[in-house]
Every structure is written in C-alpha cells, then in structure tokens.
Amino acid sequence: MTGHAGVTQDPSVKQGASHSGTLPEYYASRGGPFFDILKRLSLANDDALLVVRRALVFTALAWLVPLVLSGANYRMFLSDPGTWARFLVAVGAFVLAEQHVERGLLMKLAHFFKVPLIPTRSTSDAAKALARAHQLKDSVLAEVICLLCGLTISVIAVFGSLPNTSWAAYPALDGPRLTLAGWWALFVSMPLVGFLFFRAVWRHLVWALLLRKFASFDLRLVATHPDGKGGLGFLAEYPKSYVLFVLGASSAVATAVAKHLLYEDISMGIFASIAGGWLIFVLSFFAFPLSAFSIALSHLKESSLLIFGSHATSFQRAAERKTLGVNVVTSLPEEDNQQEVGLDVTEQFRAAQDLATMLVDKGACLAVGSAALLPFAVAVVTRVPANDLLEVLEKLLLL
Image (cartoon, rainbow, N blue to C red; front, side, top):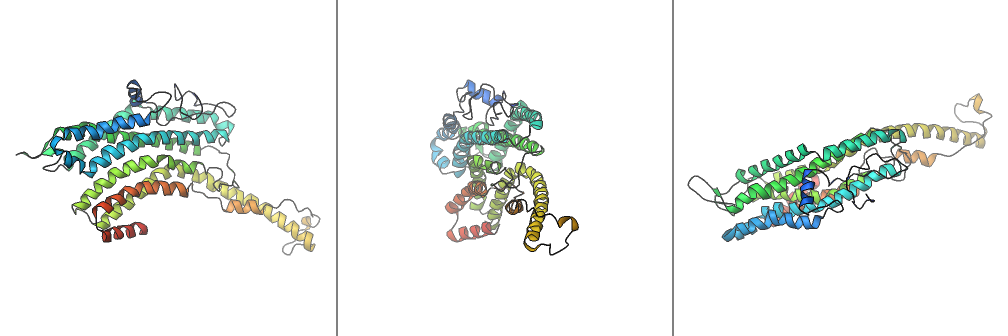
C-alpha cells in the first residue's frame, strides 16, 4: 500500500498503525461484493478506481441503451428531462464522485494520526473502530439491501407515474404497457441509479459512525489553535469531497419535483419549500458526524476559559500591584509580597473565547449548498416564467 494515491491489495491491512508507524488508511469507495465484480469486469482494480471508464460504461447502460431501444420514440426520450437528470447526470456524478470522496476521507483520517489528535492510549480503540468500519462498509448484506432499495425506487418511479404514451410506454385497452426502453429502465437504469445512491449513503453513514466514535476519545485538542476549532478545522472541510455526489442526487430530486410543477400539481411556493427542505436535509446529512465533536469542543472551551481566566486574573493583579503598590480591590495579605508578573495570557483567553463549538466550514457549506440548489434553479429557469422564478428565489432567500 502506498500513500494516499489509493494503492492497496487489501484496504484494511493498515487499520491499526501506530503514531510512529505507517498511517492507517480508509478506502471509502473500495471493498464489498460490488467492487469485486467491478474488478472482474476490469472496471476497477486495486491500484485505481477507474472512475472515468466506469462512468462511461454505466451512463451508456443507463442512458444510451434505452435511447436506442426507444426507436421511433427517441425524440420523446431526449425531450424527457428525467432521463438526462437520472440516467446521465446522476449516474455519471455518482461514479465520478467516488474518487473525490475516497481521496478526501483518506486525507482527513490520516490527519487524526499524523498530528496526532488521538492519544496513544486510544490507538487500540481507534484500530478496532477502523476494523469495524471496514466490516460495515464492505458488508454483503448492506449492498443487497441497497440493491433492493434501488429496485423498489425503480418500481415506484416507473409505475407510479407512467403516462399513457411516452418513450417508456404505449397505450393499451387495459392501460399503458411498457416498451422495450421502459423495461430496460425498470430493471437496469433506475435500479443502477438507486443502488449507486444508497451504496454511497450507506458508506457515508459508516464514515459518520467512525467519526462519532473518534469524537468519544480524549482527543488532543487545544483551544488556542489558529483554526478556531481546537485543531479540528480540517475535518469540517470533508463535505467538499461530496459535491459531485450531492449534485447527482439533487439533479434527480429536482427533476422529479419540477415535473409536478410543470403539470401544476404543486405551486411555486411548495416548490421553493421542497428545495429549501432538500437543502436542510443535505446539510444535516453532513452535520450528523460533525456534531459529535461539539461536546468535546464545548468542554475544551469551558475548561480553557476557566484556566486562562484564572491566570489572567493573577497576571493583571500582579501588574496592578507592581504599578500602584497595592490592588485596588480586595488586597490579600499573601499577595502583598508577590511582585512577579508572570505571563500575559490575554491572547490565549481571547482565542478560547472565539473557539467554535460547532464544526462548520463556510466554504464547505457554500459548495455543498450550491450543488444541492443548482439543479432546482436550472429546473425552474427552464420551466417557469421569470416572475415566478423571482418568487422562488425570494422564498429560498427567506429560508
């Protein structure tokens, strides 16, 4: 295994590395039965994820094949925003995101041990937590459930909103019947979209549980760290690695909602509320693992302010006695002969006051929030008048 480039024969072999040894590694996008299948098909290997090759193959299966199968109805297929958003944009974004996610999480994990933030007495517990995370991430049962969820979403999406005539169906006496393209979408395209989505969500949940376990350790934090987050500022940036994933998921959601807006099933106000709710959901998705560190940061801030405050009081009283010969208020006999000023901890006290107890990075929030709302903005621009667009933007700003 070498560095952070993503080279390994067994992603879990370095779970328990010590501070002085090789850093432990966590390959978020590798492992599990699906990855094994990809390796057999030469769509991934132990040295590289081959995301570009895989994105081309998967988007061809999800989007190009049903386009060909739609035959004379290809214009209907191409004019359906849902096929573009789900089968092309979402699938491509989910696959390409794997590289960014793996690299980002790998670097964040390494930082814990490189500083180190995890004390020596907790390294064995950290190793156990990493081993457990690898087991959960690569679980066969988890990927089977993700596949079943994908199939369920496919059935709901296809049969729940099946028109009488489209690229996916044709009219019949007993109701619309699926075309070849419709059957392909039912059993290949939509399940692929759903599986990739739920697999990524599951693996993020495993990462979240790992971080929350790390948060329970007695971490080596410092209130005066220049990042203003006790030395954990690097961790608040990890959601940036998921921008492509969020963009893909938001494209699918926004297109589905915009369809109801087009047919006037929902109002612009409801559309804006759904977009705002989706934004809150996405931000909460990443806030869940980071919120676990708030307890440690709150305790750090409280303890640091007490200690620095005590030293500041002693320093300022000594300085006052040195200047005036006596303390202005409550002069104590034991202090009369103490002329040593000591160290001024004013800057440390102010830094502790400014210590953030929530791991929030504005740049990460902006990147993820933009990826979450951009597809909604595109859907609105292409489907509603300018006046209605301004109404939606105003509501989103209020949210």
